[in-house]
Image (cartoon, rainbow, N blue to C red):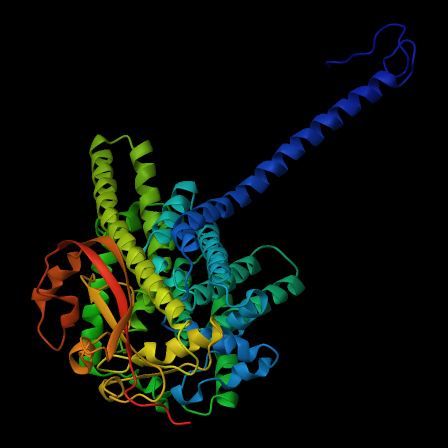
Length: 588
């Protein structure tokens, strides 16, 4: 024994003060124990906190340009602000909005109305909320990768791949997109379901399951495509049943019934409050299993995948070997992520439009899959004794990094285009807010687009100018005797990357204002011209697909004839405004 009884000592080994030394010894052991416990708890907390800190840092880095230049856009942001103002004070109206479209997404309106109630029509505040949402989405991804058996290399790779993807840039650089909220609610439901597998009482598991149902219902009512999680969950259940692992089977089975409950609740709400069936709304009836539509959609989806996710190709080449020879956790993550990605692509095949931000949920799964493969490959580089396998792993990582550079370059181009368009549109709104009372604005475009509806909403909600009216077309722009102040707004755009972030289709101007009204005679005065420019490098590797099919299967807008794979130009976007001078006195 380290401390033995000495001759003449007291009953506790002390000669003068019975019990003192032993008490001190016990106190010392207790102090050491408390210190070690404090260290253990601190390490545990750091292990739980570091994915959140990493997510916060990446989200701040990605969103910094947007936070430095916050503007609302002319695609849905005005409608979001107007609806937010209407809903505040009358919350039940979210169940009855835009019924003629056939859509039913009250969760989307409710969430944005809450944000509007808190921050008002302040673009910086909306993008600050987007930064928080991106942080949460990234943190959820990191947590799910850890729960699936991933280690720090897997988590870091997954977070970086998602943070710098093209769909992330477009989704979070716009204030009104539904996909960020949709993904956050689905991720929250997955975390709640995963927590039910941990040892706990039935009451706690019931509460967690209810939270999972609630989060998934919010996802369904934010964007209806979330119902694809039901077939995805059934696929996960089949994989779990094949694996024979009780924990996986319990998770998958729980998530299936959570999906069933959320889907039934959503259908019940839609049946009760949506007056137009899904196939009869002027918007939703475009969702159809039509061969031509689906063929063109498959081409567009393939183009986006090659453009934004080419870095997965070398990883997938190694993926078959990884599924067979890697550890069980990685195999599970690869299969689950693969089913997720397939589901989120299939849900958009019957839709006649394909935008980059639609692929944000797909990017979430691609980041998880890529993180698993990159993490395993990195560990193979560090620990494999075979020089041949290490060489192959280094080659895969190098190729992946180079192809990921293409993704980042296109994401940067998307960000620059988005910022330039929103700045130019905000400049236009700023100028039009100064026109005389009861002025009429004519959008000089050949076909109506979203700007015609959005511009008056921005003037009303942001600039408090409800007296200004907005119309479009050649007849309005050609009025020779305007009775009220008349301003003709003509768009200008050049050298846009294709495809890129969503911009309203700007057909050629409906009328040449100066030629029609005679600028030299003083009847048409150019009172404003503003444009924003940005150098963009477009790496259009997707154009290699253009020669593999013919119309109507491929979308010709993805295959412009004036550029090759590498396209370096100065993107320019802006507006010019002419004031038409009245030739007679307005009626009194």
